[in-house]
Amino acid sequence: LSFLSGPLHIELQAELYSPTLGLHPCFSQINFTSKSVMREICATAINGHENYAKNDLIFQQGTRAKQMLFLSLGSLVYRFCSAASARPRTLKLDTGSWCVEATLWMDWDHVGTMKAVSEVDVVSVTSSKFRDICKKDPQTYPMVRGWALLFWKDAQDNGLGLLTDIAPELMRKQRGVQRRPVFAPHLNNVE
Image (cartoon, rainbow, N blue to C red; front, side, top):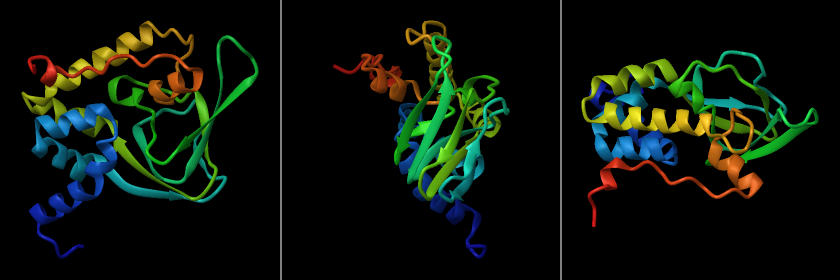
């Protein structure tokens, strides 16, 4: 791979990582809005695949989060305590899940602990690089800013009574709560 030209390397990175990132609605919209921004995210903000063995610690409560994680293979278990209960709760994440989205939008310390239940592959997006890339593009920035504001509003209006490292969608699914509408500014004028 070291013999690939710069543009070919960027295209390869985009082909490898766009499908995984595209599972998240914000990244799907970025790809829809600007393929060049998505290519830059894939080439610059992704650290590559990280492999973990069964029982490996992915992150620990109280540590600073710097990356959003996408589970591309295997299963993880997340353990945390909610404000309503002193008893720890456990959630399982499977292939196609993501977590630690909050680090894209704000400073975030992990509020739970994540371990591998099986051998896993994780794709991580470095939050500071993601923000730097998105704020440079005049089409992408307002859309991403809208996602950040929606995430912040969700955090403020959190009907579940807790904030976690887990995607709000998964938390709602686990609790049987109706999903919030997706912020989709590019669809506002479609009939």
